[in-house]
Length: 233
Image (cartoon, rainbow, N blue to C red):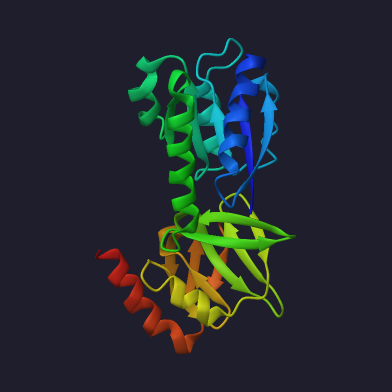
């Protein structure tokens, strides 16, 4: 499984060191970490999503916290790790919703712990759905998914910022996978995350991305019962 990793640091020697550390650790796992190096944080192309972002904090052009905030605006569920020589940033990093804080003078052991935590996250089916797209495996947190929409021979997975096309997946299997979570199946071809419901008007559901979905009348009563149960949680 290939994991696309972006490393941002204004020091080229530090970039190479972080990449080499990850490369060495990748031989101990079944994951292939494909690392992209970036010295200028201002040149980050936010149209391209990475699985992991490893950011230096103290950079002259744009500090890591500000860069992380801009990444979260595009990808709210992004996995961001801070890698820095400044240990005093640790508390601020967690306020910035960091996935992990890595000290450069403890690079090997802390990078290993960070990647182990990431591997646990993407292999834990309670929290992660894996999209199979164009020979890639794309892990998405269930929290970031607005809905699953079944078409004739493929599945679309909608998030706030992107729609992923998956292989043909049986909706009964999706419903079973999400049964312990908060998703509600409203028809044979649609399973939604009620977290993203803005309002319900009759048999019409308006989602936070302004998409409107009509609930089949035969399913409306069951949907409303499940939605009220969700709201009372």
